[in-house]
Length: 138
Image (cartoon, rainbow, N blue to C red):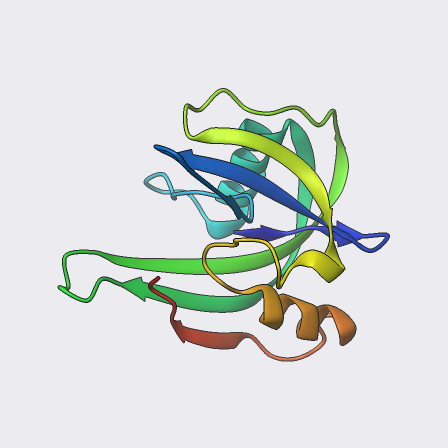
């Protein structure tokens, strides 16, 4: 998952599952043999049309289903845009891509629910150590 912010806004991708729609940070699953950074660059291009350069790893979280049927590990990286033209990728789950005001992060439906952590870290310029955010299954 990639955090790209500037001018008071953050890049988010809208997903749809049936009638539900919600926001996520852009990103996705690793391909075999791919590094976190390579995955971030590829996924950003696929989902948003933007080229990015990864800056640093900032968070790690998990999502463990209560019945233990799924265990997802999310790695969060910061990056900055180096080129490309913003356009929505063609994956069926994608419903939108936009720069959302950072101040709205705690009000939008964001999965995993990391709005507060992003806001706090943005204020500090992501200057601290990598944070483990725990199990964020919702």
